[in-house]
Length: 135
Length: 282
Image (cartoon, rainbow over all chains, first blue to last red; front, top):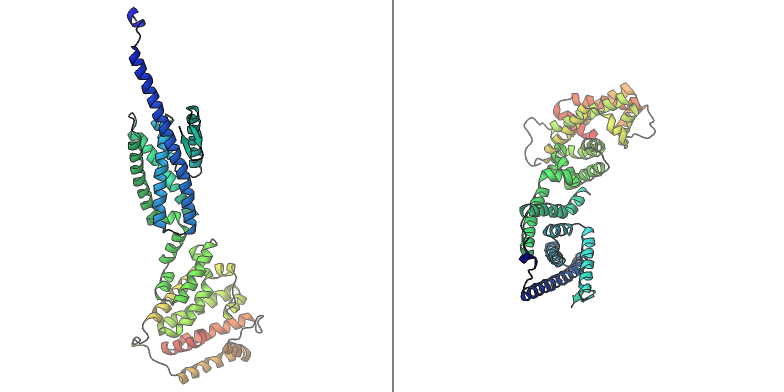
């Protein structure tokens, strides 16, 4: 390594731009995580609601099945967003998506992701409530 | 239970397969969230559809659905199939209910049919009035062979079968030879098939009719011979179909007399034999 490269310092404008981009990315991840967390919380509530509807036998079986599939897709969207917000790798995202289909384990996974998200959001100064977070 | 477990495992199994497929095809390059979700859902739907189709095939259902397996086994049995096709709804339901109960207790299909023998005997006896002469004779021959087998095994068993007393499960499982069981089931099928033909259709040409008086005369001839051979009281008991428990006469003698009676009837010409058997077996 020569002398000139050792003493090289990036221009202040570039450093500023990098910092701005990092901040922007962090902001985006926080938004993703909070969105994902809301979706996961709503999907848990929707699941409970659907179970109640299933017991009351108000809706025909096929409609219920379709609604369950819809909620499942919604949950997966939430899981993927939280994972992106938490900076998880693609393989980890796939693993969490797969585990979302396992009875009971899916609850543990959703609670785990939600807790992680809450911690990250609180650290960033967000207010985290029962139905989600806001800046 | 197995089917329920399989149903519960279906979604996780599909998700696992989907996860592996997505991981394998996207190794080395990162996907956006939307694309990852889209791919995951497409593969999952294909996988679930495949599993669903597989679960609907007979080969899989036979393994995972005990009720389907039971019904398939039943449907494949010629006697059950005959009942389903030709018997009255009540008869068919009675047999179905009995067999399902036995099999749900762990009996094999063959064992369940052995246990159903008293029921089948009763139902078939009720049908022989509507059947043709050949079927009635076949049923009579099976009745004689059955009594002979039971008598050889234990005269009391033979007597109990005369009095239509319930034989215990173990006795039913062991009392009859395989040949007798086969002949019995064949005769039941024959009776039901013949009874199911339209009663307004003329019977085969060789079926002569026997007048009541002629049959009564022949019946009394046989009764007299029984009285000579086994005694008046045995003959009377047999005629009245009175088989008290405990037996008044020695069971062996009662049983021998009944076998003699049926054999004597079977020796008569077809029309007469058929008429006489109908009167004593129904």
